Length: 135
Image (cartoon, rainbow, N blue to C red):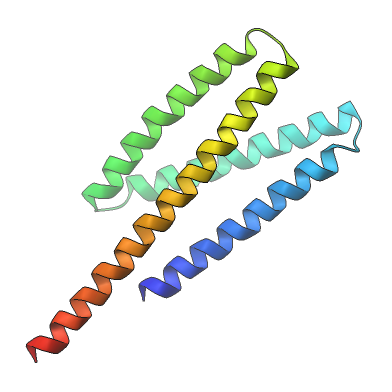
């Protein structure tokens, strides 16, 4: 069961990363007005995704989900503050550096998510093995 759920989530992540990558590539050839429209569309999409995730976490009965929701809120606040600080001095160099580190952190988060996924699969397989041995 864990494999199917995690595979579906990884597939969703693959699709999202591919869409983000294509948006970056497409934006290189766009004019400023079109780029700003794309930015606004992505802002709305991000807000909707965040609201959906927060709702799922808030309605979960798991304490871990509550902990994750609280951590996400703290991290989101810190990232927003860092973004505001970096962009308060309008500089394309500052904005690019912020984007670069945001992508680095996204990669780190994806790696951590993979590790947690492998640990979950390990736990499930261990339980199944223990159940077989108990019979």
